[in-house]
Amino acid sequence: MEWLKVIAMEDRTADRPEDTVVRMVGINKSFPYVQAVTNGFFELRKGEIHSLIGENGAGKSTLMKILYGLYQPDSGEIFIRGEKMDKYTTGRAIRQGVGMVHQEFMLVNELTVAENIILGSETTKALGFLDLAKARTMIRKYIDTYHLDVQPEKIVNNIAVGEMQRVEIIKALYRGAEILILDEPTAVLTPQETQNLFRVLRSMREDGKTIVFISHKLGEVMEISDRITVMRGGKYMTTVNKADTSPAQLSRLMVGRDVMLDTRRVPAKPGEKVLEVKDLFVLGRRALSTIKRISFDVRAGEILGIAGVEGNGQSELAEAIAGLLEVQEGSIQIDGTEVANQSPRAVRDAGLAHVPEDRNQRGLCKEFTVYENLSAVRTDDRTLTKWYWRDEKKIARYGDGVIAKYDIRPAEGKALAGSFSGGNAQKIVVAREVEMNKKLLVVAQPTRGVDVGAIESIRGILNDVKSSGHAVLLISADLDEILALSDRICVLREGRISGEFDGNNVDIEKLGMLMTGGDEGAKAAESAG
Image (cartoon, rainbow, N blue to C red):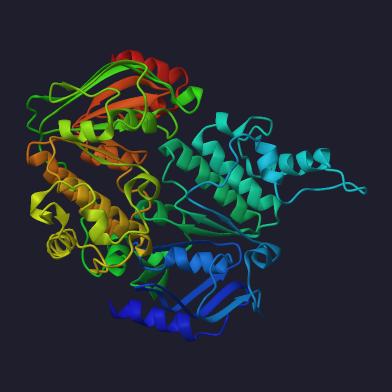
């Protein structure tokens, strides 16, 4: 590893190359209980695709939000094209040609694609009227130049997730972005959509654009990157050329130890049906996501994976099972008890533990401490109370045990949940639900935006839950995750189950087609039964 230390020192001390467009030096940023970035360093060269990787809490998103002007550093210097940026804000970042596509898209669902793109950066005529014709011409130029498959007149609420991402890219370009930061851009894409995105990024690079690619998928990082910067514990570790490294070396740099990159599925021993869904019909937030009379079951000792492009009914399915969304028709039984349209508490009492897809909206109360979040589902647990009142000492002892067991960092139970990085916040949710020891675990997007170390941990936990004889329903837009963990796979497309696979015998091309549709997808669905 000595060669990596040498590279790191050379990167920090070498004269600035002529093609450097961004240089961040000595960046420090802290939040309550957390030093997010310590003496941070980042250098970006014109016309490269530069991946930024690290564990959750490593500081990579914080560093890039500082570059985009969303956060102000406590100290340090930012140079763009050699000019020092003082009083740096998002507005100034945009004027300097910096754009950012966030993992959570920032689009107005009720507006058209074109309206979203120009919103806040409207092109006007001489008298101040909106010049839609000129705006459409500019949008069409970006669509044609970078082969972005986008339909400007469509309402955003009626387009797929992959197209939403392309809209966000055009929105950044429309504002003059020459430096584009992409935060976990492939987290919600199918393999085909990911390859399409990579073609777009390569086309942008050839046109002189500069890309920052934040990802936890090391295979993709190795495929798309020119250079790679690694952070660990809020500190800069090194910058390497792609040709000089490997996924195993990168994971060691990120985590500080060897990481099992390929999760090995534990053999299933299916038992009795724990979850049985029959002819389920649930109105969705849009036509594509309405659940249209689907039926399936999950047995004790197995993981059933639900694969599909996000927005095809996955959210509605999980929320209907958890008692969070009304069921129009059909049946949901947990361990023989009908739970359709029962309260969330009644569904839990029937045997459900639930890790929701959005930890911030459904999984955590960010204004509460870790102790409070871990004990939130145990309000009637006598081991945590005294004379029917919460016993803070017992709750703290219980919380400390869970924090240690699931390696939640920092190990500070009194810290607010909102101060934790994505991976550690997710560990809080997973730990709380798994410790309930329920017969059925419904887990949605368990490792979204989570680093390789936390992915390894969470996937291991799901295998342990299965091995202990519980049933697991895994809903994930990450196809690698579905393939790694699932004993059986159902494909959900436009609210219908379009096919089913044995987890040990999956044709990935057919699976991808089933997820996206088309003639081949239809044929695959027929052959799948």
